[in-house]
Image (cartoon, rainbow, N blue to C red; front, side, top):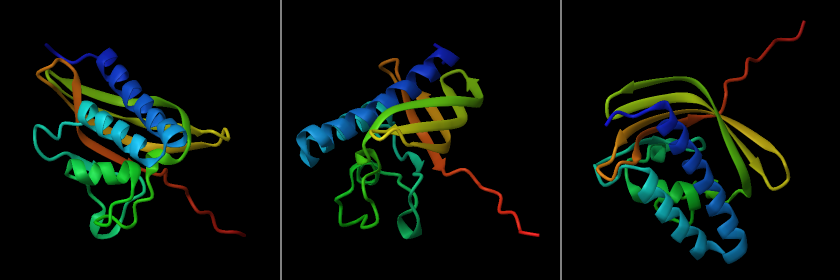
Length: 162
């Protein structure tokens, strides 16, 4: 069965809800609880059971920029992994709400790509905007799984003074 735009919206919503669930689990129950939730979110949202996932997190760089394994994705979301010493745990930053805006999407049967913006609101009401691209593949269970996740902070044009 082909992927629909509604399927893409639901997948993005679930991914964002998962990020909020990790953040609130961390605040309510500490790191171990947040890590358990993050593992569940990763297993339900990403296609690591198919093979490598092409994942470039927002705040990653150097030799560990790309995360093609479940372990690397988990470290990005919750940190505390000596193999990824720069990871502070993006999902632990107090997120309370997410929303997305679509720039464009391409659907080809059981594969789809989406590009747009994600907005993350933290517990203080501060909002972070990211540029995102997701590639999805239909999973045998009927859900979508992320096979490509690229995220970056928006480019800001620097103007020179007169």
